[in-house]
Image (cartoon, rainbow, N blue to C red; front, side, top):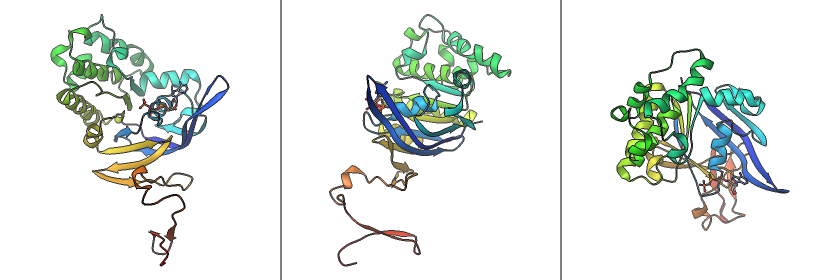
Length: 275
Ligand SMILES: Nc1ncnc2c1ncn2[C@@H]1O[C@H](COP(=O)(O)OP(=O)(O)OP(=O)(O)O)[C@@H](O)[C@H]1O
């Protein structure tokens, strides 16, 4: 069963040596249970910070994040740890960071399952079944260095879903892959989502990955700047009522441009001198 995600006015500030870096400045985002979402946006816009907060690796400086009914900001370290090992799967950028090079894929998956099996008290899928889900059953007895980059990335996904999480967070799974490697990784993500109803959130720089996942959320300057759904782009109203226009339209609508909000008609119109 997939976990739903709700972010309300999420702010995150890194404090380093007396200076503050505002990484997120008011993220409002809802993700339904079983949805697939791509997070895109310029470098430094806050995507990885958002993933770290959703995974419970850090708590937000302000605002609220609820994952599957758990309020991330209010959980103890032990509770966050438990959540990360069982309900939330995380695949870090760079497949090598997720895999033990000296262990076979079956053993990699089994090791990731061990703690969760005890904590959850339920029977988890056999490692071979999990590897089959990401298209790696033929490589079950191989070790990571024997795999191609794309296969390693899919093995990292298998480890990420080993404990049967309801939310899978994946950072840049297709960087450094060729087109066919990328498509196989996206197919593996889709198969996990379809078979297990897992909610999947993927950080990516590849627009094609976003298109294939269906819903694309653009993070810009630490907040949700835009959304793409089924190939159409939308501006998004944030929790404080502000709307970011795409930077490329700022020439057309410079700061100070007036819009008329017509409550009765339910429309927003550009104000021109003739109005
Ligand atoms: N550990 C940290 N300490 C201090 N500042 C940080 C830290 N991590 C990120 N930042 C800063 O927070 C902002 C958002 O960074 P983040 O890594 O979340 O962006 P991103 O969109 O994931 O970037 P990229 O696409 O390059 O990975 C940036 O200004 C970055 O320099």
